[in-house]
View 1 (cartoon, helix red, strand yellow):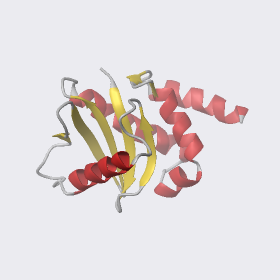
View 2: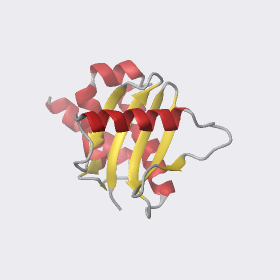
View 3: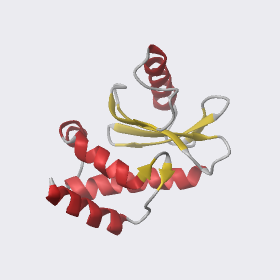
View 4: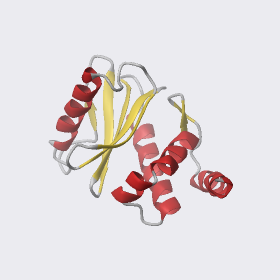
Length: 147
């Protein structure tokens, strides 16, 4: 099980947080086009009548969840279990919410380094590392005091 990327987009399709674990995406024109394609696909889906999983390419499926004005999208291998990743997206948002105290888009924009710190505690090299909210918050509180 490996995560290819995690992207956080707002309702206008602007990237607020992105971590790529495989080299095919990035700052190239193809990477920007791919992100725009992901946003177009995810934002056009009906939240009430369609699932949070969609096949994106020959080797990738998207797992996404919308929270308020933000879309959290993970690109994973087609053979991976969707519900594991959906629960980790939810865990990531819960930890952000607990760490920032009712997180909003501006918290991620102005404290992006803390949001990346949280993401790096959960996922390293595309592999899930920690699944306990309490353990994550304890580590993050300690790391936040160090800086």
